[in-house]
Length: 376
Ligand code: NAD
Image 1 (tube, rainbow, N blue to C red):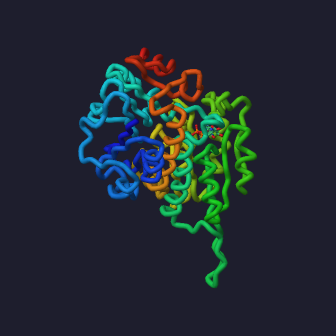
Image 2: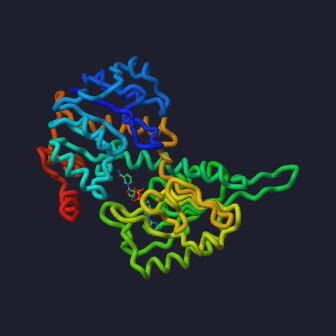
Image 3: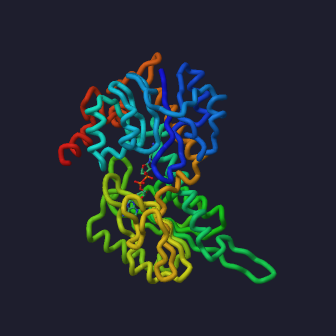
């Protein structure tokens, strides 16, 4: 079976779908791997490293894919990239198919079999294939470093000849995968850390990292899938009153709250930002889905009366060597499930495959994506 890895063309995207380590493993397992020249450079891998791992490196990918071949990507394909996909070829990538159903429809019309990595279910058996978790882990870490870099204060308490410097107070909103990694990283840098969420399960997780839980646990806040539900207007108001003093007292706020398929909830209002001290920093990891802070602008830093609001939308891509390494390992484990005896074998009785397969045999087959295509 042949897998093809293009150079990502989305601006600021530094990751690559396969790193040489994974290429080596796939080649040993009998795959043929073709990599576009320069695909791994921003993630720290030269063309020679891919060649040494057993890949063929080509300048142009036009004509590289035939029916049955796999295209492995990080970002959803642009129109030019989608043109590489011939009828019967297979695409494995982040695809955002619920937000962009038209793309799924076009892939179906082109006869492409598409698997959306963000639809891999968050179940124990799928943990090693879960790119949302691996990339969120890296993003949570990066958010803290970005905050420490932008802050005009030290994170750790220092007792020096010039007196004692108190530690920074870091408040992390949303204690999912990214938030828990942000808490752990801020603790390691010596900050005093608080964690906030509405799901009751997060209290123990936050406390196990040595942070104080300041969440406002709502009854039935969690869906069967472990995600948060969208809050009612009354709950949102209660949360804002609860958060106002916590945000005002923080030196750094890191926000990571998401509700799948919805705009990110606004947890930090403009009025709350205006109560923070000049030099305080907010890092909004939900920037790409609308932001948890009213002031956030995705992809840029806003100076709001001396409070810096960083709208990080490429945090995982920024640590491209390790985020790509983890992404590639996730894909490798998924391939073990999808490919049997050198051919794609989509067993729809497997819940991971059924949940992530978007298009097959010329149709959109995923029920929720099909619904979104109809609505669009
Ligand atoms: P996410 O990115 O969807 O959201 C991040 C956090 O924001 C969540 O903890 C959520 O509760 C919180 N949040 C949402 N709305 C909020 C609000 N209004 N106020 C405060 N907090 C709010 O979450 P995630 O990191 O993708 O994790 C989601 C769930 O999936 C968790 O239960 C996690 O443990 C679980 N999970 C399971 C697996 C697995 O078993 N394979 C892997 C990863 C995550």
